[in-house]
Length: 187
Image (tube, rainbow, N blue to C red; front, side, top):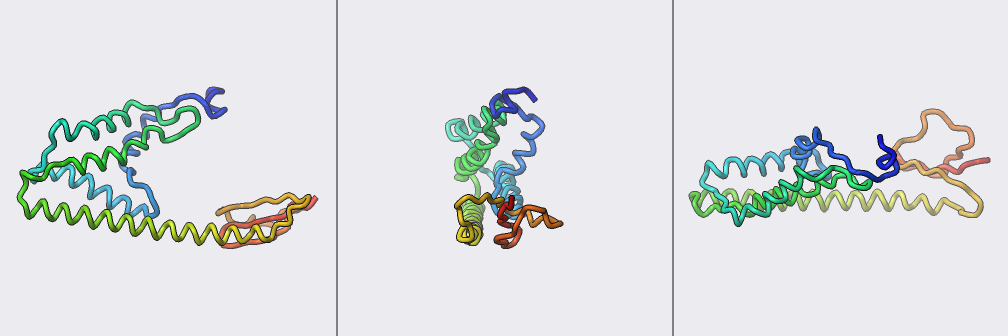
């Protein structure tokens, strides 16, 4: 690895990851739900053409530009990873939003619209539930701070790693919840 990259700088393309990135566009709290949602989105884009949905260049332009940016941008710039993949969710959303269903049968267009709204509402519900779970987890971890007298002490906080399999000399357990632990370092 070049020194600039090791220090957090530099530019790197990860060409082999670009196809994988296109398969994991919707990443959130539930991998199965994300994959099902992506399948539905890509399915609507592909089947939409067969069912009468079309794009005009003016409508599809922004999604195409974002898709091209994904293809040509590096994955990492100056230590910031995922530069290219940040464009994919927006490109997918624009591609779906700009599909013109006016030439399709009205009943099919209504089913696609209702399905899209249901998917959006379900994703928002899962996202909200995930944020609530994160909040509970953070609150529980913050409770460990009440155990910390800061004067002249050093601490080791292991977050979501589990406790060491064997007792470690010099580490005094102070707090533990789930897979997170706080230890006082004894000297």
